[in-house]
Length: 405
RNA sequence: GUGGGUAUAGCUCAGUUGGUUAGAGCGCCAGAUUGUGGCUCUGGAGGUCGUGGGUUCGAGACCCAUUACCCACCCCA
Image (cartoon, rainbow, N blue to C red; front, side, top):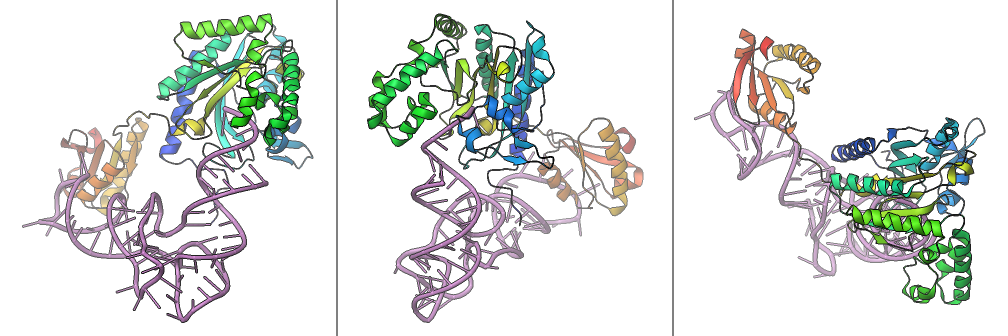
């Protein structure tokens, strides 16, 4: 037997329906916010991700499905969605339309070669949005509000965490003073933290190790070291969230894992799904477009981990729908086929059972198929050109001519 | 990459200190006076106990190896 590869899953029946329900709901809401659908290739040049996501995260360093294609290109399966959308944005020369706003949403598979666990797969799916050209912090607020709308509509509980990562003016000096502080206390830190001083110092603040946390009480916080503009923006974001009734907490340890983030960062978390609790994350990336050779353009986006919310979604109740057609005699089966075609052309969901069976068996079959109507041709009906129809919901039944169903 | 856990029917799981024909519930199929679904009852099909070695008179149970899955760390959505 051949099984799916490790960390890759089939979506079937209820899970497939959930996936569709989530993407359709999120897409509908994103369109209401003025975002339009974009689809970009799953396969991209490796250097796109090296330059955008950056080398500091494990994603690019060791988790990419990377290979050389038959033309000798160094390519990989996308590990996230933003880089491809930004590449497409620049390639379409939309960055030349200074002052214009462009807003996109997308969804689809992403690939990371990680050890699978709850809420983590090697092929997983994200729904994301990217907004270009709008530098105002109102856009940051609006994206958070959109996420809240999406999760509210899906019936998912969450908490919102926000932070500001500063800009190119205030982040580097902060980072430097943090690293200095960390080096002073390095001897007391755990092995992971000592490594992180060089790779991703802000992550150290987030260490789950209690002894590390005690040492970190005196560490400088980014939110106390923002420049005037970043500080003003962050204050306004908090104001807008409060005014709109979206509860949030400031988490100065919240870091986005990807190098391209700056300014506002946010994360939606759930406490119902195990260790991988981040169900959506995003933030501003005002420098990314120029990193990828476009004209400087402010940008902000988020992504939802679809698998992570899959089991949290409250699905709407589904009701009986459509027709089940059956025959009790072999000679009647052909009549069903022409009838089914008529029904389907008329937009009615219709399934046909080709095997002649007892009426009882057909009723069972119709019930199991979730059909609203069970229609059967038996001996009597065949001889006078009629069909017996039962409404499984209202339990009413009637016999009608085949042409008048 | 590092830890820990689990592998018995289509699914969820029992299986007592090793003992003879390996069980239950759900699901599936068929019946319960021949044309009336969901509920109930009866019957039936379905398992080389993940795989390979070992200990033993005897292994689903114990030991070793291997593979897969799960959970956690790392990282991230």
